[in-house]
Image 1 (cartoon, rainbow, N blue to C red):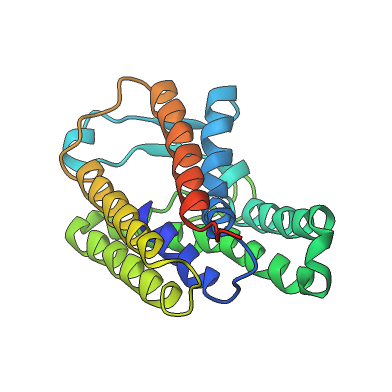
Image 2 (image 1 turned 135 degrees about the vertical axis):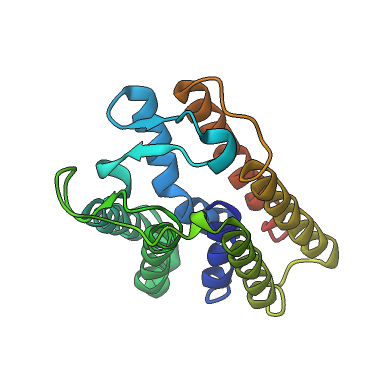
Length: 219
């Protein structure tokens, strides 16, 4: 899931207008950012199976980024970072920290929906969960599309963004959704796990930068 995480971030971001939506999108993608970083470091792994052309589903070993306990800890760290690094938010810090923490954990909740049972509850040897919605790809992609639409419909009405920036927001979200559909249906297998990790990291960074630009309210 990729576009769906952004849809969730927009829906969560509708609860506050004091935080640039780029930060909330980054929070919703933080677990993947950690995953691909750890893959490059050799601490977690992704395997591109022989049947990738038909399933478009890599096989993950990712207890430190996508375990339930690890996800709770990453969420807590993100919330604590807001409290410590943004004193200018004053009394709103705790509420915004909670929203950021929830955005981080929403990633795990949505991944449980689509992954096969490979997300560990605790460590790598603990029980693994996943409802496997990706095994019904049309339905999985429909869910992602619905999340994007719900996110946009939640975020845009109360937004102080200009009309042009709202149009940019819609365009970027639809483009991400289109790339998600292509990536999960017809895209070829990545040449290696390292290439997949590096390109995914770059995509996350660039995409969050774009959302930060779109979400910036000129003074």
